[in-house]
Length: 457
Image (cartoon, rainbow, N blue to C red):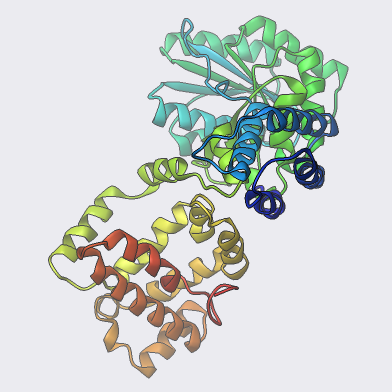
């Protein structure tokens, strides 16, 4: 997300960073570029105008700290204003009510409400340790109830059974009653999607709101719709007391217009951002971290949190112990590392959160798709346990068999073995002084894409 905006802003801000002092001329020149970058990112025009005006006012009136260059001061101002328009410190859910706390999910059809309902339920269950029940009041869309039931099973949530011949209001009342009986902390209600601002359907969700008195009313919106997302959210907030926004399909949006527009247009903060298709892919929206990523400064805190949640700690400890004992890093270990990296969004997903690595993340994404990781894992899975433990045994005839079993070519097998050798050498350095730095340097070699390194290497 934000790739095109990051690239454009990076070039603009680098031009002003080296200036000896901030003047009205060089500030205005930089802001013209920033304005174009934001408009190209599909940020709503009123938001762009207010943003530019605020940055200019602060930049012209600022005192330059002795520890910062004028260019650094300007970047800090841009960062602060980005955080401000996205809603600093407004993202927490209000669950401090008499249980069950009801969360009402609203939005247009196809925005991802049902999936977001399950993702949010899983988030609250696993990260906030809440007992969560979910229910569908969508009696119009075929299989909507079945979809939520399946997702609830995956997320290990309580599911209240509803039927298409029931009225949404009756379903909500019954679900609330059952949630109280089962001592659920949270009840999340998935509502029917609207094709537009349909008065009859809006009346239905207003009636639901009055009946269940939700602690949170979240508007689910597709990030790919850009500033239209903000306009739609505004139309909903005019008739429904929204408390926040869930931004879906954010991983597919390279511009970021919705994220930068929604809060400014609606006055409602983005509380969560869905960044993938699996049930785990829901992140708390941190405006300060997002602003940092937009400006190419990375997001190390999110990377650490992601590692804590998604990395198999038992496997990590087992590998560390193995390496300390001087044992070899074999192909089974390599497969584990591929899986761990996949869980964290692949190489590009990790690099995107490291300071100064945004451009390399884009290059990595262009060179290495998810299919590359799938192919690598398939090759290793086609080997015997003995071959995985002792890769040097793999001769020409074995390579042919492995390639045939994994649906790949012999050169793909050779490439994987070469990558494993590079990773093996890197792992030997981990026990030495500066092991982590060595690992980071070696990571590029481990994931070298087909045909050579990343552009610019």
